[in-house]
Image (cartoon, rainbow, N blue to C red):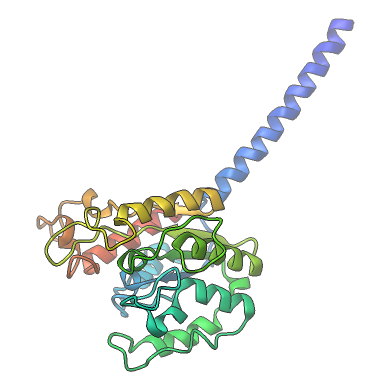
Length: 283
């Protein structure tokens, strides 16, 4: 009888432990990657990797087609995650459209700074209309935020810093502030960080070998990946995306920089690969 009682107690304890483990592992799985339900609303924030085209073949439109979800493109070419230094080639008023600035604007519900840009600057024709979309987006009614910012921080030699930084002038400080701002508005939103794809200089040098002053692109990608884990966001690694394919959709041989128009910005095949990779992750 005594053995039976002890056995039942042990069985009960094991059952409780099993249930707890099931809950823990289920939550971890759900937070990492589950197929979103029908009607999911996605907002994409990024630079010209996402915003290079503004037509049916931009990454956002292709992602919407592949996933069947509602996707809003809020990417601005030439922008960074962090505020850049005054002597940076991309400083000036585009700091106001950095991801950190946009996230803080949502938190304060004040878009005066993001509206402060030079409408005559090259390749900004779509900025004004997109800024209206930026202001009209309701983060409380958005299910997934995709953030693709890293490449221009590398170009501008923004210090990588670390997640304890209180400044928005380092990459990781700005990234942490961005995540905190978005979560303060919608604690349940899924935040997915997306790495940049590979980049080549006009001379054909890979960005993994070229340092603008604060590290090679690999250093930023590594920091981004580690930050995603520490901040509890999801992460999609696209840095080696082009290396996974050898032909375009017509069967022609194509590798590396052949998926871009200039060594950086994705051509139609590159954009299809990016959109498909994100859609596959969400599926």
